[in-house]
Image 1 (cartoon, protein in one colour):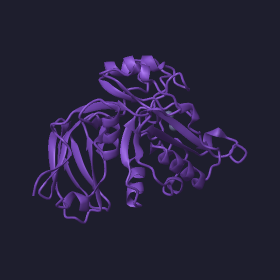
Image 2 (cartoon, protein in one colour):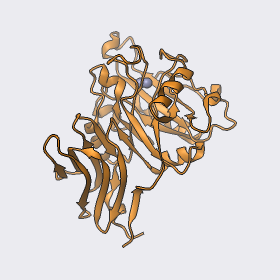
Image 3 (cartoon, protein in one colour):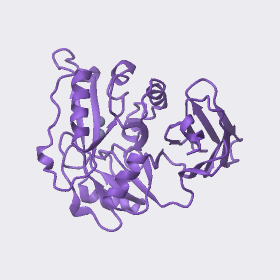
Image 4 (cartoon, protein in one colour):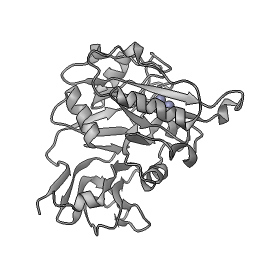
Length: 323
Ligand SMILES: [Zn+2]
Ligand SMILES: [Zn+2]
């Protein structure tokens, strides 16, 4: 059986923040400042996802930096029903433009404020038909529950980690919601993002930049190559640990990574597998034999600082198939 490669140990990686607010909406930093500061931290890709405002920042693109055409749409529950903003449920969705060439960004419709899942699904479907990818964001901050996100349709990605929410004390890390979506048949990939607004200055421990990132494996830093990598799941989500490679060897799922203390194989059911070492010791590789009965599998890493990285979820039957 030949080796099935999911993330190539020899591949090119690009560090991305796929959820980001600049002064176009309610962020404190200009798009240029974000580029400069993120580049210094090793990022090559930024999706500026300003609220209800799709605009391109192609003036910032160069051979070492790429902007993804994107915006964040919200659909809020009615204020007369929920007069207190603190407890008003909202849907927040990021949209990523597969092919912005020739698109009139200002003409992309923003959603009607009708808080029903039917309206939300219609809006998602319409944007997907026009050539966007969709990510469902930060359910806890949105004051949403299982009942709100399980009926979503056509969503490509789930925000497993949102650094801005984490710093607000709002459960930025949402692995349980991700597994609920997967267990109920959704096949979403996962992103870790900053959702930075930078209301605290650079260097302040409350600054919300540089905490959650998505690593993208692509042959080169070109718009279509990066989008294709997102579509094909050549990505992982992290707060710190790095994944160097992920592949099948015979019936075993193998991961290679930066030093961590825990490596968990999470499956659709109760039984998982894990490796764990004492604090101060480290793991950089794990092999998990698969039986074919796991449903889906995904791998979660935790390092000595308590930071997590997550692979996407994979269908075990597909991993074990001979094609
Ligand atoms: Zn949001
Ligand atoms: Zn946001």
